[in-house]
Length: 162
Image 1 (cartoon, rainbow, N blue to C red):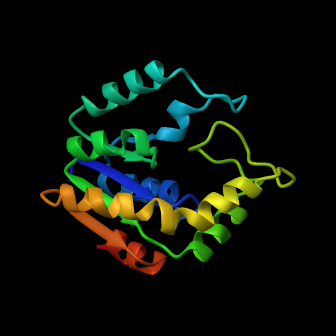
Image 2: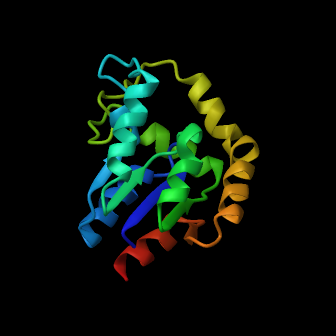
Image 3: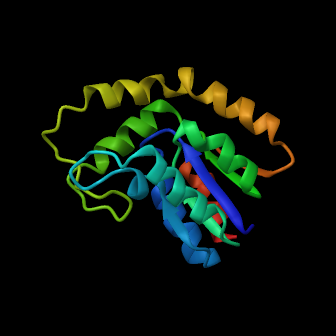
């Protein structure tokens, strides 16, 4: 396990899991949100995002946390391990609500409690239906990789303790 991607629905705890995995493995950790977003909630130009991502993937070891469907297959090709946090939508919705108002090392701003995030919550509710099939298809395509799928936070914690 030298090149790891962590994927899953927003609110599943990808970044939290990634930090815990980093503390266990010592692998360098990179959050896609930090290279994609600016602190004013605008995005960097696509070329800049891809350049930074390619620089990370050229390294010998890394953990990359984040979905970003447009680059997911590229990251699957480059990694040796895929960790998919395949949690129920209700758990992810609760996770997204829980993190509001908290400073996070994986995001360049604090998510406000009063922010209208109805579209984001709708995205989380539909993730299982709309995004999960694509992820499962990619996992099947890259079945030569070590693929670890967790269906609960408890299972993920047990894995980290091993």
